[in-house]
Image (cartoon, rainbow, N blue to C red; front, side, top):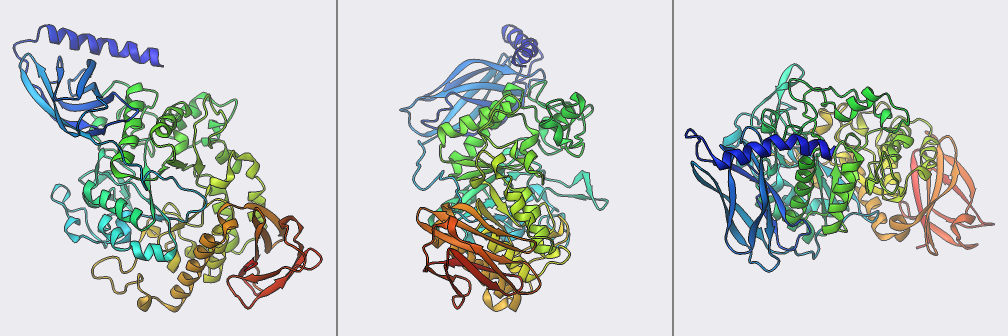
Length: 631
């Protein structure tokens, strides 16, 4: 593929050289519209950094650097239309931070591009990564809290704000999250996963219709500009303030990224920087058929696999071609830039399985060189453990070890919802966990009971507050990194994706009530949030729940007992998912708990049990969980 790309570039490079030698009299002066990345820091392993300069009349252009500590490496590479120019810029290790200028010139004139050299990175309390010791909390930025109404209807994107329309912007922003960090800290959250903050298109999306009408990109997954912040959310400076404030509160930030596709209105769609920037063109491309089983089939139908890997999502989201070396370099630098300039701690990568593993190997290697603690959770939305586990790093798959740290544990998610929301057999949960041997590291998987792409727990048929308590108790005590979804702690409802993304009550001006405060919550909401807060406290205080080995002790149709063991300390969880009380008697030997040890239920301290003949006998009311510890 690299050889093919080199051959395709030759006519472009040749035309650039010819134009440099002798421009026609009709040539126009170059114009610079955008420089990506706009800045880079001293001491990065990615040096030189490759700039993508967008402009006009760039054919035949030469680039010169002005100012100390910066120099241009090699010959610029320019696309046929003269609208994009690639140039490598080296930054001296001992140079001073500050703005530099690049002069872009051809025979007709000169223009300048501004580029900033940033100080060497400060790693203190930044770039930390996430672990099973954390409690992650997913926030859809636009729907959590409106802290700055002045950005609700920005000048460059008028008319996209309407809280009555579930597909428009509602006003949530960075300021709103900053204002509620104390709420999140009190809930027991130690890591925030924020939906993408890339700049989105500044008009209605008339390509993707919702209920027959145009929509907006409030969710963030249709990037229009990979190096700018969505103006409805705030500015880069406000994002940096949010990250700093979260770190001060002891809360990490996980950035949601998209490397598979762009939004339908990205300028690249009509004017790509290279001939192979996308898989296909707007006029001629494959549509994604989502036959993801072909990705691990040793004998795949070639067309099906290609349609799945290269097809455009929903037939309109342009599919980036990571086999193009320039696309790969662009995406790698983009990830490094966001981490470096904001100080974020981890990444949730959207649509992981639709991108080649050969690219992911390059991407994760570059990430770990500069940010060795930063880890990544990939989205592979599938209920099959065989399929999902295929994508975790640690094993060569499809020609490369992707290096992926973690995955969203969707197989367990579906088992949780079936058992605790719908009241089906609880046995489905340990049956799913029994397949952990397929993962290279199941302990770093992100476990969840709700998310922004599915209906909410409380809208499942049969769901109750007691069932939601059980689900939270399980997620916060089993193996993996527990993840909560905003509003599930107060039993928000929403039967489908659109309604599951509703506004958090009280986060927006004019709300009838404020569920961020105890006084305005219902009895059920307050009872549930106290239960979740208690479960996160146990997760924080009991070491085995953060690092311990998972040990199954008892499993039946509606009862389940398991332990987490860390060294000589063990914690025992017992769950009764039945609609009536149950007594279970099971061996405790695998935990190493001594004969006669008294254990107290951390949810109900009056409930105690004693290890007798290396067994425990526990009686629990209907739809109840107990966490037994020797304290």
